Image (tube, rainbow, N blue to C red; front, side, top):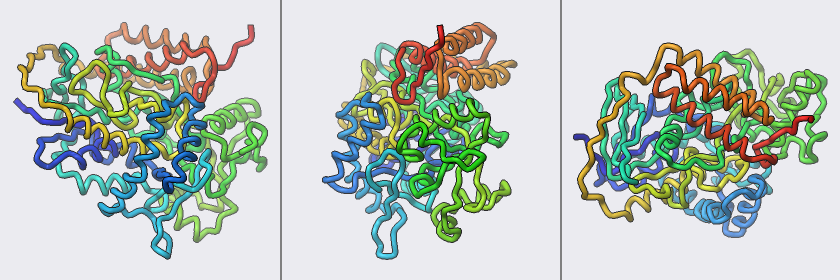
Length: 485
């Protein structure tokens, strides 16, 4: 029997930072679906927020609350900001290579809805990639790839481990503690910026097991994404571009965002996304990100990855402007937990990172708070794990298995239809009629001959749609358009 002290589901920043903080003496297994760098952390461009100092904490808290439409849990936001100072110190001490100026000081940038420049970055626009590599090289525990978790072993309010496909073989893995760090729900949407592995399976298991998902109506859409590519994961153009001064314009060069909000390009993500979506719908015009105000040498140094990626597509930045559209980016809601990552009514099961609903983000995430939240609350989950006595009771037998039916013949077609419907009806602008249409599709599809993994996706999609239907008034990233009677 394979038994561990801790199993961590996911090898992004939440999973890896938790692993870094668990003692080497413990038997810890970190699992990921595919290769470890196929995760959202790897693709994060902008940076990681930290309060600049003690004096900046109240301002960072207020910016986070304002962006979240004051739907946040204030205690969680206070923990996030206060703990950011110690986190920055820890990362720097361990050798994280944040960008520095010629004088050796850390460089900070500004993004939308921040009242000051407080975002650390690395490799210019490759913060996630640098942080992921840094944490991978400092993880003292076993990291196992090609491990797809399709069930949590739960009985009488305790989690005993997971069932997973390991290199295509059904395997049961037992643990005293299981930490879910599996990320968000991006693959549910036709246009998204997420890694292809982020498909909401674990959220779907939680629905099945009666574990609460909270705030699922608050799905965040990133306003500036290049979507003219055949792959599901679209190309993000970091908010730091607008923070540094890039414009959003229509095909005639008009900066139309000021018609929607006096902050223009620096309004919060939900406002900018809706404005672009609405403007395109009303005018039929193409919308672009314009970088022409930047010095070429500076731009290539500050945004080396964006420069290279778009050069391969035939764009010469900063001279050329790039067509953009909003795309799904981040789940503000997730698995309900306390500020220590503990899941109510469940022993031995914890959650951190985008999979969790800590209450930090409220109705709309403040730019670059995500990497910070993942690290701060992963560390707190580790403290909770280390402070919990080891369970020494008997382990039940778990008979039920799904290994022969993870995929069925028509799953791919249904999955594609689901992504189109979620984008159209549970996306940036919603209507009650559209949400009911999505709900009907989900329930009809659940009654068809489908595989286990599609069933889990549909569970999560249903949670998003039902939460959106329950919230009758617009708030933050949940925008419901009233239909004319």
